[in-house]
Image 1 (tube, helix red, strand yellow):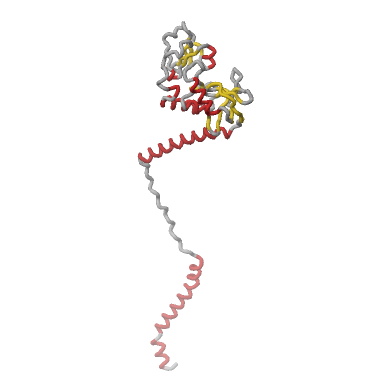
Image 2 (cartoon, helix red, strand yellow):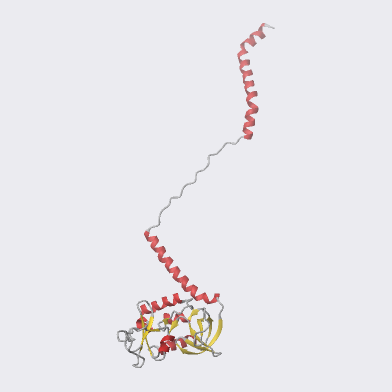
Length: 275
């Protein structure tokens, strides 16, 4: 080898060694690097859900919600009552005439006693007011009859709820103060609403609950049987000469009444005093 070539190789020996080492490293790492990059994917840290802070409603909001809920429940009850007849089998009929405040006669001659209410008899105050009001509502009109449990009463009259359009006439008579609530099981389907209507009429002093009606006087001096309502709500009538007759005071504002006969008292739901 010529001296010039030897000198040239000697001068560049370290460079060749470094280049050769670099080539070896690239050769070794190259396939592994490409394999790793083609099969492995970097993992991402899971995202944490941001918790929503809980706060209790204020007392003001709670009161408003309660008021709103009570109003909605009252509306629901009224709505349910108005459309109740649409979900039961009803009989269409025409009212020929009104007998009294709680009895009507149909065009085919049948008589209907309105369930759940009771109005004054012909010898008692407010008889004509109750009769005329029912006459205004249904006489000469088409109504719908709804049965509860019983078919007839002991007088052969049909026991029914009267509907005019979507309005329950039995309830309306009580709500306006023309009739008392008259609970007589097993026919009590709407008695809760009727009792509530009576309380409302009494609070407003409508009709039978008017302070203008005498609170204790015998209406005509002839009907002497006292129809009293006990503290427990039991209806008991007292005959002249009875142990409690003189002590018993009649208060129409509480639903108490005078009767002319025992039959009349029993028909209205009162029982005879045991003494």
